[in-house]
Image (tube, rainbow, N blue to C red; front, side, top):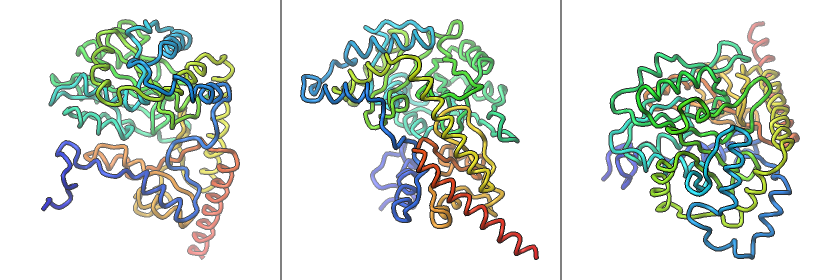
Length: 410
């Protein structure tokens, strides 16, 4: 018999990492016919220049195992991309590794670099795989809170003294995510300079997740911490094709860094998937070489979708923090949910409005769940018609709530 609250047979280090809330919310969307703005994946295809290369590669030798580090042309394209957009120079031969998406790159890095009891400092709310990957490596998460602004247009912030205080003699690695999921924050150059100084002072490796690097909106600038003075030699940079080319199911990612660090990651990665996505690798190489206009238009179009959703959330009476990047906008539900319970709000929203969102509390360490209890994340990486329908449904809910409030005042 297992103890109450425990998942049978699951190792202690993974207790608490059960079925994600995304599965629950997606099931609610199907059951109620709701517009699903929960999970962050686009519902429109990627660029034909990329898709056509993948189609042509199927049925050729590309269907078989690619080289362990990834095909040479993709590694070269990743290196060219890093130089072109970030001024970072990597040798494709031993400083670029192709992975099964960014999640595998991050997990392989943590498995390779952590010993049991080593601590990882990161910001929360956090992408949900981070804590699980640290746990699988036997590490310990040391979260530092990002705090939402008092007004919607301002960015999320953190206290530098809290970041410094989270670092202990057991801290080995600092895990950074910018542009940040789920908040949409883009860390500024000044913020990154302070983070870099702490990393150097404490001799920390920095693992930076930059999958949203091209989904940055007007007024914000993505800076890779690896490009700051003295940081290249201690930083591993992770990104992927999924968000940039609307192909999240392809699971083609990469990790770049100094050869000794990449070699360590490759040692762990080779015993995970080993290799993947043979026909997709040449397609992603073609995508990374698309002209600048493609990347500019990608961000511009997504910014339009962001504004469409943000306006709809405002119309529904939902205070929203306007994101600087990514697929996501965050709402404070305390004004419309009497107990401020974001999870309860998300569980009833499909019936009340026909829209699905995700409670932000799932992106926090359980000890800090109170910090995100009242927050909810909506995804806007959807077609115009889908977002338009969601906005109209939310607006109807907002009007109904106002009418009900007016009746109660009479």
